[in-house]
Image 1 (cartoon, rainbow, N blue to C red):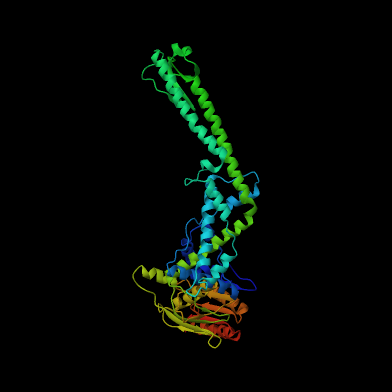
Image 2: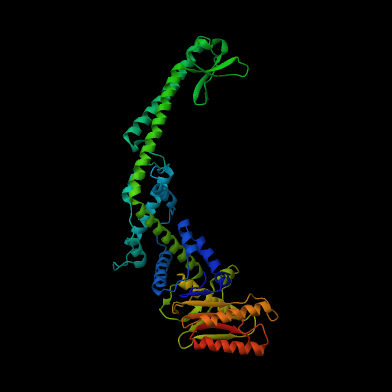
Length: 470
C-alpha cells in the first residue's frame, strides 16, 4: 500500500505507524471463516465515494442486526472453494462424503442468509436492510442440490442405505453374509469339538480378514478348510473352515460391490454439481462478503463505531471522536479515552496544535489519521452521530517515534525528506498529518522552515493537522 498518481498514502509503513495493522488483526479475529479472513487481509483504502458509501451502508446495516440481536445464520461458514476447483479441473474427480456434507451445510447457510435478509421487513413492509438484501438478490441458492445431498447422506455424513435400490440390496445381503459367517463358524467349531478334534475351549480368531480356529497339527487333515498359519512350535495350525471361507468370500464380494456403488452415487452427485460451479463460486464469495461485513460490524460494536454522515467533499467535522485502540487498552483498566472534537473544512483547512509534551497533541493527530483511514476502508468509526465526515484522495503522515530528536540528524533529515514529498505532491484533496512540525533543529531555523512549508500547504488548499512546540 503506497502511492500512485491517483491516490497516495505516505509513507510505506503508514498502516503500522497509525495502528491499522492492529485494527486489521482485531477484525480478522471476528471472522467465522477463511473466506472472511481473506477479505480482511485485502481490505484497502478507497477514494471512490460511491464505493466507500456502499461499504459503510452495508456495515451499518449489519451493526443494526447485531444491536437488535437478530438470529442471523452463522453456522457452517465453510470455505469449499478448493473442492469446487478440484472437480472443475479434473473431470475424473468426485466429491467425498465429507465434502458433500460440507457443501450441503454451507449451501444451506447461504440459503438461510438470503432468506433472512429477504424476510427482514419493517412494520410498514419495507426492507430493513436494503444494501445487504440487494447483495443477497444477486445470489443463486441451490435447494435441489441441498435436497439431493440430504437424500444420500445420513446424520453421520455417510451414504444412506436407501441412497439407491442397489445399495440397499447390497447392504442387506452384507448383513446376511455376516450372519452366515457366524452361523457356519459355530457349526465348524461344534462338530470337531464333539469329535474331539479340537479343544472344548477353542475360540475363533480373526487374522488378516479370515476367521480361523486353532487345530492340533495332527488333526488338520480331518477338518475341511484352508490352513492360514501355524504356531511358533508347529503344534497348532489355524484353519479357516470351508463353509466359513465361502461365506467370507461372499462378504468380501459384497463389500467391493458396496464400494463401487457408493462411488457411483458420489460421482452422480458430483456430476449434478459441475454445471453450477460458476454460480457456486459466486455464492461462496457472497458468504465471504457477509463474513467480512459481519466482522467489521462486530468490531464496530466493540469500539462504539457508527456510520456517520458521509459526504463527497473534503471535511473532518467530528464530535466526540475517540482513538479506538487507546480505548480498548484503557477499558482493560476500567478507564475511558478522552474524546476530542475537531473541524476541518473549506474555510478552516489547517489545524495547528501547540503545547507541551504529554499534552495529547500526538494522540490528536493519530486519532485523525486512524479514523479517516478506517472510514475510507469501510470501517465504522467511534464518533458522535452528529459528526460529518468526508473523503480525501491522499493522506500524508509524518509521525515521530517518541524518541528525543533534538540532536538526531537522521530523524531531521527524514523530516525534511517527508516535507519535500508533501510539498511536491499535495493538493486540495490531501490530508496532511505532521507531528512535531519544525523540530530537530534550532528553534529560529525550524520555525522559519515550518512557516514556509505551511504557507505552501495553504497555497495548495490542502487540509491538515499539525502539532508543534512553536
